[in-house]
Amino acid sequence: MINLTPNAISAVEKFMKGSATPVAGLRIAISGGGCSGFQYGMSLEEAKNEDDTVLEYGAVTLLVDPLSAPLLEGVTVDFVDSLNGSGFKFENPNASSSCACGSSFSA
Image (cartoon, rainbow, N blue to C red; front, side, top):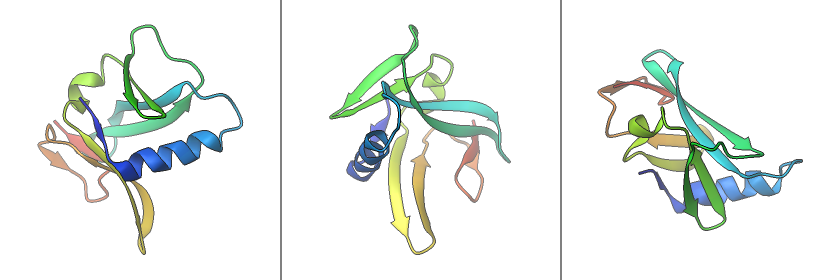
């Protein structure tokens, strides 16, 4: 379903260890918005929902809601650290187009 690169897994592990509250997993979700129609969202969650798809990547548990799952099929998530800044990068084979910043897309 979703592929996390080693850099992404390492970054998420650091965020989880630095959290002030217990973390059940990292939620990746799609919502309406952004300049291309859909946008990616990520958040550390204290609990999983009953209908979540749960994926394990070593110490990282990924939580995906049923509405986001089809739009995230085959997505690769990487963490990039460069002179221009650092952050998560999404490569989505389902996107017919995406914005220049890479944080939103259209299906």
